[in-house]
Length: 231
Ligand code: SF4
Ligand code: SF4
Ligand code: SF4
Image (cartoon, rainbow, N blue to C red; front, side, top):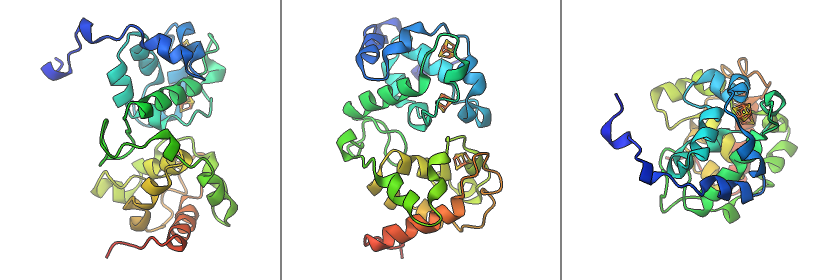
């Protein structure tokens, strides 16, 4: 049985939410979804952890569950790499819809990619604070080339001993911050200093992301920018 506080009542539905998404660049196709689940079967994020489910997110959006969509971590994790799009019989571009929801969520003060910064936190990131060139800066450095291959599956996270000790140390979230252009958030993430670059995750990454090399590159850039490891 659902916990009482998680029960949704009809008057909490925002029936205009789907139209707002439809008006947002990237969100145009949302009304074509007929909930077959083809995207979910193809999504690498879902493959590792069932709680992340693109079909459910789209259904929640169509049902007007705005708050639930904005609070969902999935819209921040979806890498918009479109592996699912080829499977959609309705030609829905789920990655673009996730981006549209992310932009809308940021405008309303939600940010859900950091354990310390929950939805509607005063520290929530704003879209004009994102640095879209950040990932390319890392990619140019020897060892940083593979960063854009990450499709956020979470295999590294599932195999990371730091994550086992404390779930705020999370390689996938850390890489997502960089790919989304959250420079300050990445440089102040304790995981950056914590990662021991011992290669356990490198061997498992289905995308061949060289996570250990990447971590050294990012740490060097951070130090050049005046960031230092915590004492
Ligand atoms: S594959 Fe397309 S139609 Fe099917 S659930 Fe996903 S978005 Fe909807
Ligand atoms: S674009 Fe997003 S929803 Fe689609 S497969 Fe990739 S991560 Fe999953
Ligand atoms: S770095 Fe590799 S294992 Fe980690 S989330 Fe990205 S694609 Fe998955």
